[in-house]
Image 1: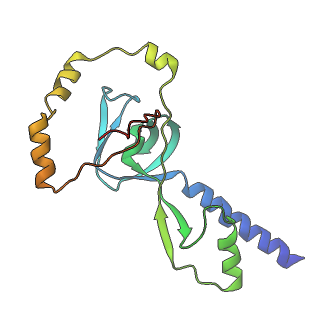
Image 2: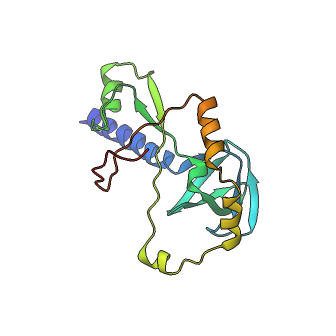
Image 3: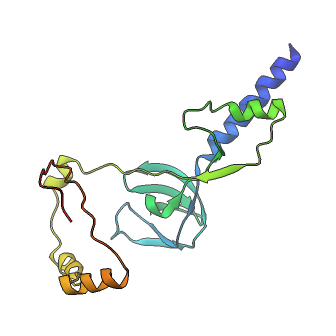
Length: 176
């Protein structure tokens, strides 16, 4: 009975450590810690690549973090959320299998690092309240390539045209 209690206590300790580790993330590039979840918000600090941050909350494309002694917001795509999985394990496997491997003597040295991120789409209210930025659109148009330049680039890169089916159901053989 005493051994069972010890086993349960050790398992609870391991699982709580795993849950705590999920609050940790790292910057995957040099990024700015912002005062608010807005690209135009004041910059509180610049965080170098691979800076460890404590995740406090997630909100769409932004994550509220604690880093460099300050609390602010970082774009979620500028963060890497490490998770450890056993190589060869299926995504539908038992999450407690690593603990079972510990007790059975199986090696768990073969590990892979994975990170996943998701961002919700725009709500009807977001679209309704959107206001176009003419200066930004003009700036983006300056990067546009004309057809001859695009064809030269494709030829130099030895790219070939590929027909892709139209997801809207175009029955004319797709678009190029």
